[in-house]
Every structure is written in structure tokens, then in C-alpha cells.
Image (cartoon, rainbow, N blue to C red; front, side, top):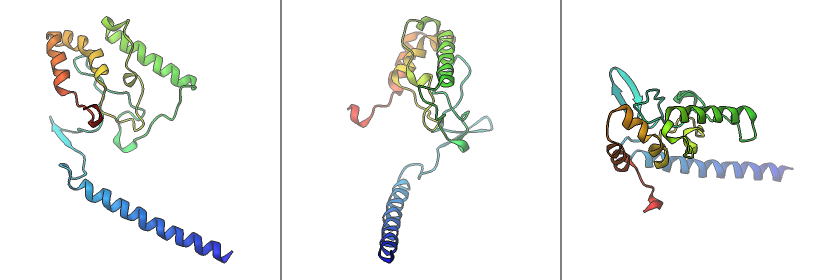
Length: 166
């Protein structure tokens, strides 16, 4: 019994050292980033917004991001924890699909990109896919009285590629 307790204590100490070293490396690495590991804050009209946290855009003039399970509250980051077998979740997703198709009537026969109707794990993801942006392009062009090509060029110029897409 005494051997087991000593082994457990040794393992605990070793793991504390390993995890502590790992956390130190991650923390030091974050300090070399442009924001030094802090959120990028944007001040606009007296309000504070976080650039890396999703926002709820209701106006049809803007791209709509992913839905949020926490109403875009960064203090309460979380997913919904509901899966595809949950009837309530399926109804919520279907309602989002119906709303999205109503907002984008010219896209009725196009498959809705999944990230436009499902929340991310954190509930705060600000990014949408290229397909999600293209899905909304016609609505935005119409609302802003701009040629569709201008919106498509904006999407093309603002699309970030993954390191693995190169």
C-alpha cells in the first residue's frame, strides 16, 4: 500500500512539472504574437468589440456569422451540448435554416452551409467558410445596391487560407 501511495505521489509531481513546463512554453509563445496573447479590441462609436469573438449582426447588409449557444457572451463561452439526436436541437437548426432561406430567397435551392445554422463549440467563433460567405453574397449586394461581382471580389480578397490549403 505504501509503495502505491509513493508511486502515485511521484507520478503526480512529475505530471505537475511536465504540465507546468508546457504551460510556461505556451504562455511565452503567446507573448511573441502581435497582440501578446491578449484579445484584439476594436473601439467603435464608444463601444468595445473583440475582433476574435463572433458578433450578432441582424441587419441584412452584413454577413451573418455562426449562431451562438451563449448569445455571443465571451464570459460564458460554451457549446449547446446537444447532438443531432436531440429533437429540440433539430428543431432549432431547422428554424435557423428556414430563417436563412427567408433572408436569402434567391438561394432556396442551394444547400445551406452548416456553420450558418450550427453554433461552434465555444459559441463565439467569428469565422464562416467561403461557402457561407458566397451563400449570403446576393443578399448583401442587393441590400447595399452593389454589383454582385464587387461583393464576390471582397469575399475573394478577404478569404484566409489554411496552411494546409497551400
